[in-house]
Image 1 (cartoon, rainbow, N blue to C red):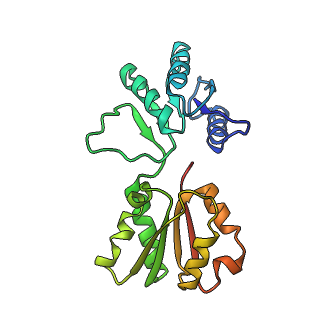
Image 2: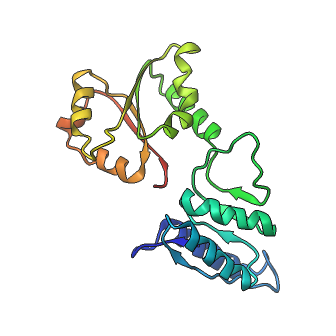
Image 3: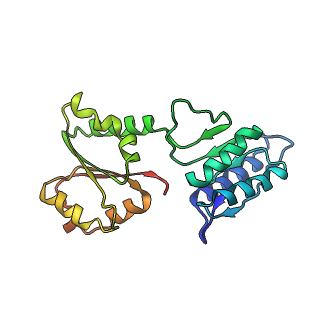
Length: 218
């Protein structure tokens, strides 16, 4: 199940590429040819997602891939759990401790792995100061190891949030430049990361390194 929209998503391209590669390599699944059925939906409509998932299951599919938004993905996951059909995802998801999604697998790195990787990067670069800029509260979960670092390592950390009511990051970037905050880690969508990196140097500053971490697909 894929999200709606005029453009083909990176996830859909990767999915088709993987299926075609497996079919070309006859040693992986001998005497078997994989086929797929792609349905485009409104990713915010859980009812439509459920209906399309049921249509696909009636065709005899062995697994469902997607959709990418939690509003529709959770509905599909419930159906897959009930019918014991594997559900494959590639989006960030914070699993509760009592997770009951038995038939769920996620190819996206879990937040522990992401958090430790970013902390390792900061330590490798020998940063003693850094600014964390997050988009929403889930960013604090993904970056929790780095946020807790000042209590365990010799790192001074400043935490900021991207503006909630605007896509214009220039005021925030200028404020960080005035504060000489040049070593920055962004937790945001890849679209927002692209906007930040496109800002002119006079806005972003040039006194050090900046790392933009696009850790969400949306």
